[in-house]
Length: 94
Ligand SMILES: [Zn+2]
Image 1 (cartoon, rainbow, N blue to C red):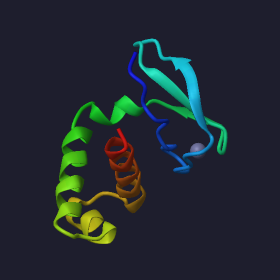
Image 2 (cartoon, rainbow, N blue to C red):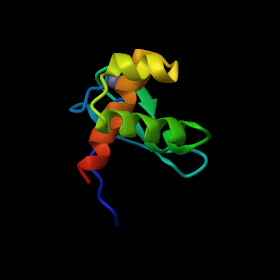
Image 3 (cartoon, rainbow, N blue to C red):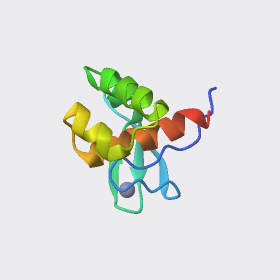
Image 4 (tube, protein in one colour):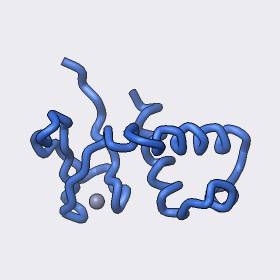
């Protein structure tokens, strides 16, 4: 069994109140954030072009760009950037 650290919440980015919350119909593990009481699944970012955005953000961060620069360059909202940064942090903890 693979043990992963709990991810941070996609909505409020809280890390300390996130727990497993069963599975979705497609078999993905779902998480529930007790801080904002919302559930989410971590794998959804790898569907569609979000995986590309995720990689682009990772690349631009590595180049020393700020969140605001990246948001402007990619034309996406700042809170989306911070969500991806949050997920990158989760990935590096593995
Ligand atoms: Zn939350």
